[in-house]
Each structure stands twice: as structure tokens, then as C-alpha cells.
Image 1 (cartoon, rainbow, N blue to C red):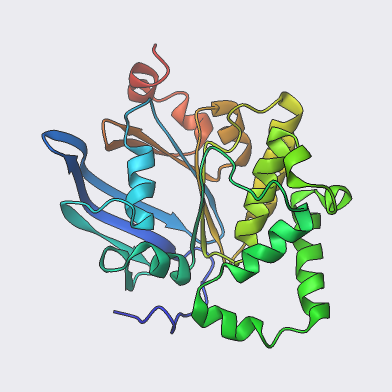
Image 2 (cartoon, one colour):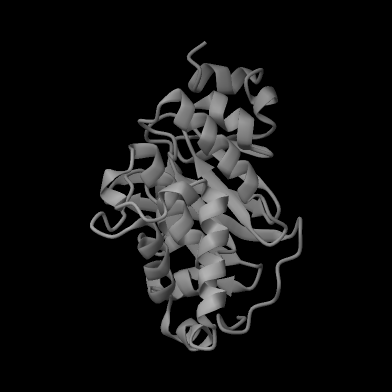
Length: 259
């Protein structure tokens, strides 16, 4: 197994995360019977499906929150995530944003991003000590611009609108330069304007050195952002391809679209 601290640079199109033969159960309830899934660098990969399809459970396994009964989960094809704890998985380059934003509301937007650097695992902190103040300020400025909150940089995070808090939390993850960025229902509860901004942001997150995995119920949003879509039903993948093709797939229409 490749050491977490000895990672290779991602290759566009290469497998960022590979799940094979995954089985997850809670007592007698089988959440995921047998799942095979791949997300690639340079792509935004949408995962959709009805409630209880296993979408969030899959993310829980990737981040180490839930341990499966069977299967393998590998980052970069060589890092066995199932053998690691949650902090070490984060160190390996896996970042996750939950549906409900979690920011430090008493601090400014800028301070939230600066704190995200300090929350990095200890081995990376050694590298950060070599950063000049100018370099840190520049990095914060880059992320502020990327998430569209430059004008709000010195405002308290507590006064931000719901959508803005979501973007800030995405920015906090970006400060840590994740190789796999997972977003759980990023537009839930957003206005149409906020949803449009989030779609623009997620499209900008596409990078040759990053894979983006998005769980979402808003199919129009997924169609806007995703290069590839996987549809789950009762823990099984029933479709993978383009969103426009998923809309026409008979099985997808039957189990998810209700027609």
C-alpha cells in the first residue's frame, strides 16, 4: 500500500476513488449489497437516487465514518482507505462538505479560511510554517475569489445568507487542496439565484488534479454540473452516463422519476 505521505500527483482521467464489491449493513438492514463505483480526476461526478438509495452511506464509507462488511475502497488506486481512520483519510486528500454548513459564525469569512489551514493534519502544518505571510494572504485571496465571497471577506460568517455559508465551507475545504472533494446536497434550501451561483462554482472546481463527487436531488442542477452521473437504487448502481441519457433510461424513470 502507498504511504499517505508519499502520494503521486493525480493524472487527469485516472481513477481518484475506486470502490469494488462494497457491502454495508446495519444489523439485518443491508444499505449497500454490492457496489462498484469509480470517480475520475478532472470530472464532476453526480450521484443521484431516491432516499435510502445508499448515497450518503457510500460517502460515509469513503471518509471512514462507516466501516463496511466487505469490499475495497482505494484512493489513487493504491491507498486503501478502509485501513485508515478519519483524520488520516483527510490527510490523504479526501474532503467532505455535509448538507448543513458548518462555519465559525463569530469569525470573519477571511478568518474562517485562515483557520482551515490550521486545521490541516500535523504533517502538513510543517509545510505551512515555511509559507510567508504574503503567500498565505495570496492563497486566501485566491479562494475568496473562487467562491465569490471577496466582497464579504471581512464580514462575520454569521451574517451570511444560507448559500454564502455553503460557499464558505467549500472554500474552507479548498484551502486544504483536496484530491477528492465530496459535496452532500450542496443546493438544498437555496434560492434559485444561489443555486445558479453554486452551479458556476462547482463547474469551476473541475480540475485535472481533483475529482468532485456530488450527491444531489435537484436533477436540473446535476445536469448543469456533472460530466458523469451514477444512479443508485437500494444500494445498487442502475445507471451510469450522462444526465440527459439518465432521464430517458427506462429503469431510472421507473424507480426515481416515478414514471
